[in-house]
Length: 241
Image (tube, rainbow, N blue to C red):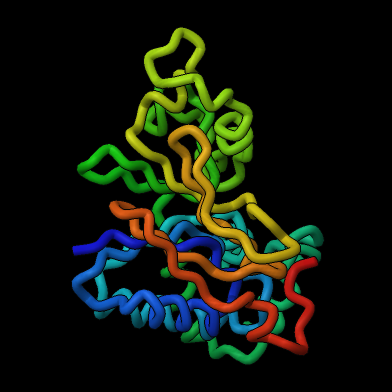
């Protein structure tokens, strides 16, 4: 069984279908989605419908992203967040205008069921953004950190490559897990990039909401599959700018 981790989709269903096909994904694989399923391209409703159907036939873990939480707050609670609308929420709102109430209720249940993080048996942590507590995710004070934090990736990128685990100044936060897999912070917004390793943190967000492809990474072998740049698959749409 392969463990495959998928970066931020941002309603780019065409990119998701493409990368699953290119990776020859089967029900024998374990799929871990890192969140941000909506906000960006026009197929928010269709993307979530596809994920719900996929959950019925495949071994899936769905992590909560900040955009998923913003969408849930609008769908369930009627919260009108101007910043959400500016950062891809407008396309999501337009997509849901065509959806039935039954579909909306089903999607609310999906968003509410998302997990803040997943820690597997090999001590590998999967979450959307990051955490700040030096003792790890079980000790985090604010759950919003799991899907909003950017300091984990900044910390990993700032380290001297010669600094190793066990060194006196190696960040304690990064010693808690064998590997950490995140999305949230695009490696590039302007072109093609591959998932990037810094310290023991893998960033799998390759900018599918902007000018980049959607990426899928084999956790064991580190083999990467990518869609075409997603904006090419939605030629008459702005995506997120």
